[in-house]
Amino acid sequence: MSQRFTDGLREENRPTWDEAVGHRFVQELLSGDVDDAVMSNYLIQDHRFLDAFVTLLGSAIATADTFEARLRFGRFAGIICSEENTYFLRSFEALNISEALRDRIPDTEPTGGFAALMREAAHTRDYVAILAVLTVAEWLYYEWARMRQGPLPENFVHAEWITLHDNPAFAEFVEFLRNELDRLGADAAEVARDFFGRAVQLERQFFDAVYAQNDPRDAGTPRNTSADYAQEEN
Ligand SMILES: Cc1ncc(C[n+]2csc(CCO)c2C)c(N)n1
View (cartoon, rainbow, N blue to C red):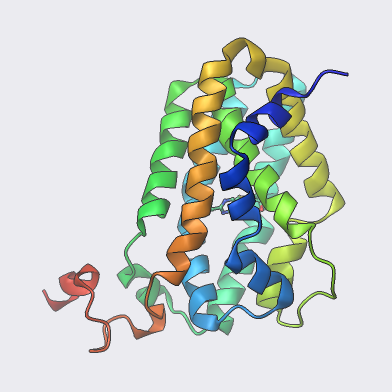
């Protein structure tokens, strides 16, 4: 049997893919040991990621070449715009992160890079480019979430972020995305490889960035001397 097109894409990006799936953040999340400051950094940035992601999903709804695919994207958009958003809001409350504080935290470079990539893919109006980015974002998360061997962490902030990406409905959606990209990608391989590869790089950088920052809950206090917050003085 010949290799799936999406398996080939992953193989081309294997080292970076594995660095993301096996990232320190993932390991600490699965064992329930992520520091609150790190989790806060992650969730603040990821909540913004979601905004551009929903834009990308909208473009998938608009460009899909079958009614069946359009319906699946539509149902998925419904879930993300409801349950997932409340997860973020409940987590921000548990971590004591107010909306005002979130507003003071700038985007990290990977957050900005991801938003730009997703907007670029959406703007192409090319279903293959859109699928390539969506597939990385979903498949890579499914791969790390299903690596868990021990019990779920007790903290809901950790546990729910794992179960959101490790459940039968999500697995089925990942399989659907891969099938779509398998079906259409080979005839537009350059576009698929370009967007897929850039998305994998950004996934790894996104995890790296959460360890490169201060505790966001210190934003605006003297300890945080980053020029990123200089605007606050004005
Ligand atoms: C940087 C980053 N990459 C991928 C995902 C995964 N993801 C984004 S939206 C969505 C759908 C519902 O969970 C999923 C799985 C993420 N959260 N953050």
